[in-house]
Image 1 (cartoon, one colour):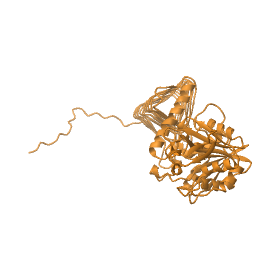
Image 2 (tube, rainbow, N blue to C red):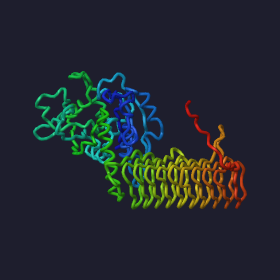
Image 3 (cartoon, rainbow, N blue to C red):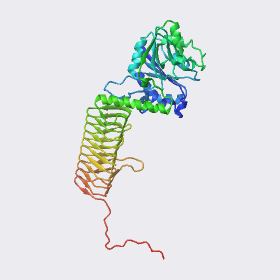
Image 4 (tube, rainbow, N blue to C red):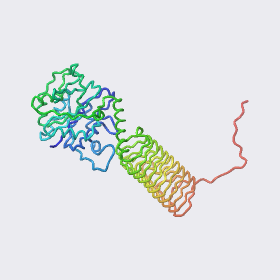
Length: 479
């Protein structure tokens, strides 16, 4: 039977103390609600209906960007990404409770499926847990995801009869003192045949302490109709933890990062300290990868066999090939163009690689060197205090300290070509468009505005003047 997912994302999130809708706050680099939709894709959901309310236009706009809901999170294991489900939106205005919210979604759901109800602020439920819940539902039962908590304050309690069968969910505000002693709680996640859910929702009323239409009341309707109510109980509270405050968001961020770190360690990646690791996108690692403390990975990053990442590096949207070493405090951000670091390359410390940097084998990029939209062939080196922008650099080029390509004329970018085996001295300016011929040498301090012939020495600087016995001006003494 097909699975359709309803994501409740209408809440205001007052305790977040933010203008941003709660479900758009980020965990692991992406919005909370996007994590939920990604999980829905991993259980092969046919469609996802997102219920919006507070900040509806902002939430809908964010999720309508193709890359927002698609793709995969966290670590990648080589398995194909799940197909993105059909995504649609309904609005809950005014907001009259969870049952009222799901009522708004029913016109978008077909009766031939199972409805899986999720919360847009509960990002870390694992696909395997949801699949187990769907298996318990089996297309005919009402299945609830439950958890035993030492302190269940605020949660709906699972009420069972003497035989242990689920009879009802009692909201905390409506519970008696005896019911509040129950420690098994409802997580807010359920799976239910859509046709039955439609009928039960039509019977809801708001005769309760909050004057709202509770989705949890469908349990008593199921019992009355003779439909079995089954609970799938888990022990991992993180999977059903929601976000209602910045503190809770921070706690879940660390839980998420710990989960990612443990998966990496299981794969054989060496992490200097799993507690000081941050993944805000996807990370694919080969064998014998070594990652030091405080490394941050964003977007899509691929690390080849034997790659070493130094402390305090930030790496986004990059492919780093086998044996490359990224020394501490290096910043790599490929944005849309990406960055490629070739096998055996040495980068940093304190280097910056920007979009379009494509470095070949054994390239060296040293401290305070910036590379943008440039290719460097095998063995090229820029070891100190330099800038290469919009440049094509040949094999074995040595690019001197303090040298730059002047690639922008105020209106347009121009390209610099430095052919193989060129030596560029320190403090040079190569004014693009210009080509430095193969095997040529540019003398230190030169400003090159015209292309040079292969094998030539090019020097373009003012003539040195020295005045013997020159006296430096002195300050006048006060009278």
